[in-house]
Image 1 (cartoon, rainbow, N blue to C red):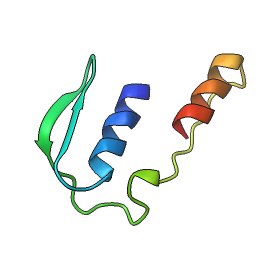
Image 2 (cartoon, rainbow, N blue to C red):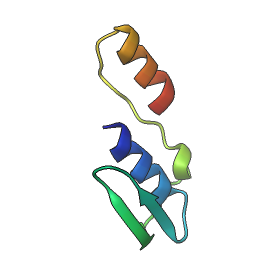
Image 3 (spheres, rainbow, N blue to C red):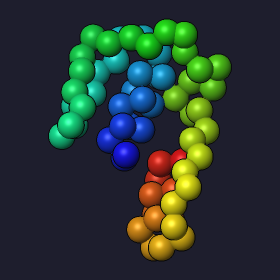
Length: 61
């Protein structure tokens, strides 16, 4: 999930996007139409409030 959100944020930044991760990789990619908020589009996560869950919410959302 962390990598998927990071890849989406790279696409939502606008323009020619590239991203390299363990499961997702792309270069010279575009996403249209872009969200009005760009890469700062709010993401809501339903995670357990464990220390790891809270860290992921703070980092990703």
